[in-house]
Length: 193
Length: 288
Image (cartoon, rainbow over the protein chains, first blue to last red):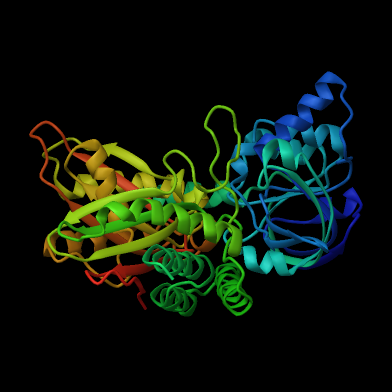
């Protein structure tokens, strides 16, 4: 099944997505890697105001490649980074910011799987390495935060995208996890060699 | 143009080419994989990868936003008159490409997390292979972080033979391949010391995908491992299918009686490389 969605999207719609569905996204999302996750949670714990509001925005595990000229920022590379690095901080983020879905690659662990069930959210896998296609789907840079402090890949980029995808729902709100299923099957097959 | 400027310009062009244009042998292997895949998701992922290859090439965009750790594999003719001048030229080329392509700043201090660009202590990585002759052959590889994290150093019981090596590498690869942007290229270094096993694995990654090792026993190992990895079903993007790896390249060195280290190095499907030759004349030339 293919879902073409425009953000913001109600949580109830995300809860209906099933593992194996394909999603094409338009609208505003934010990028955050492990450093940005730690900074966001650190701000929450210390009562420090974030310079942006992650509430309700999909989180893309991505360190973009960008070029700046007189007319502003152009994204020249946009694609997923390994999501496993965000496993420890993701449940707290999902609980606090009503994140509708995550985009990344490689899947995540059991804590996130449970958290996706609890918050009726989903994890979507983008095809790793397809940064040029991603760049072409960016409609504009809404904002960039912490660029000076952590550098281009680890900064938080708030981006408007149009028709970004294909993304595959690999962890859904019923607890299904395609990464885990395929890994288990692969392990079984490889022990018989 | 001084000699130095000519080198930097040729090397910068090689870095750009590797970053933007997927080598022909890799594209062919990906097309072959698409022909073999039957499930909808596996085909969708390979079609997306091939579409990305076209968009990158036609628009001069990097294939992947992770433009990688810059690595140069240098086959250095011991009698080349230019050896001493090369390291600075390599760093200058990476600096120039960081501005012109541009490359993502990807050199980060391990403790402070400070991101200083793409030239720093230990970056670019330069692997020197001293060989007889008067030519320098420099292959640039953009090494992505996801596939680098999937590297392995295994210690197989010595004397257990090639089957034990195969099983150890297979177990490792099946565990890590989903996170290394499959379909991957697998480099395996068998024997030597621990560091050497990994170095052999890394160097093996640079070969053309269709090249088999000249030693028939190693070539047979490559074929068997590729078949076993592809039977795992991990598939393109790790979401199921018949193509988990595009190629296996192995190499070996004699081992200590008590030790059989096996190095495993992986490259993502974006197997980005380009070669520059500097012959005795000192005129650098980007190779096809």
